Length: 177
Picture 1 (cartoon, rainbow, N blue to C red):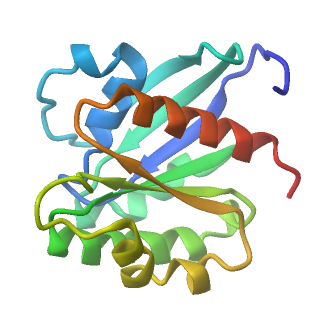
Picture 2 (picture 1 turned 120 degrees about the horizontal axis):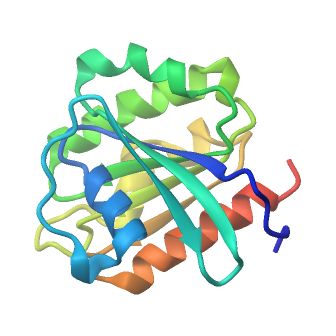
């Protein structure tokens, strides 16, 4: 794609508590079959993730989703090349909290040109919001009108969804802005 670099591509995973951020990080790193139930994140987790199809490496930060930690996230913004916003589609309160996270991301000067990949987690859970519901609830077409963005699904134990998220982030990073 862009050619392998010695410097990993910096990606932030942001979203409310219980959105699935740590699950996604572990699934990217080890594969969905090797993920054990993650503990809640107190500050952040970080992993170097290899994208085998293209030979690129990502440095992926999973940032704590507690509302009181939102302001502390700013310390991670410098040199970020992509953001994943996680949303738990099976939890309406989580969707409302994700909207607050999105507002903070859009307002951040350091992230104004950074693409955002919205991940609709648990979208296949009975009673969960659909991808279209998430687009509407977060007002994605309006809020992200002036930036590169996409929405992807993440179904439990579905490695192709995880691989698609990695591939999509790589496309975003190398897309001219």
